[in-house]
Length: 227
Image 1 (cartoon, rainbow, N blue to C red):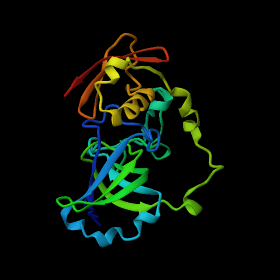
Image 2: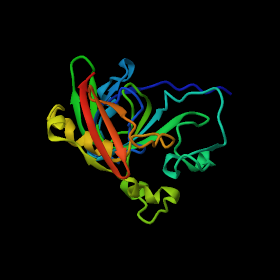
Image 3: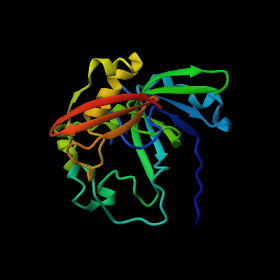
């Protein structure tokens, strides 16, 4: 039996490409994004009562990772990209149905003239334009499990980089984007298979191209240019 689902909304974020997007939601709380609903779902009644929740679950599509085939094992970046794990034991985008799950903080509900009612959220890990299939409230008494085991992801905080962002370059970014940019860089945007010392990488973020190098545990921003 074929099952058809369609997007109810699209994400509007500062990431025009998937490079540099945090590997999990909530890692960079400084990130700000907006959920814009598709025209047929812009009935404000669909959001009645949502202001009472602090966080939301988003079910969405890895739209840049859609393939005709899939593998039962994948190589998680947090394991260096060399160790294979079962696809259902990871959050890899390369899955049978290419579905993503993210928990975001709800910052506010805004009623606009041209886009209907939109949601402003923090901590999203979605590329600009990502199709969203469903939104559900995060419920603390059932969704939070303080003693849960995180498997191989429990060491995620050990991967943070020190970011050296010269003040004259940081000043080129809008004031409300600076903390988010530094936080994104601290989580090491590089693919796990590209870790060459001295190589210059480019991150497109919030309308700017931020070029940087990494030496050991230190990331240094080299240039900032307008896209």
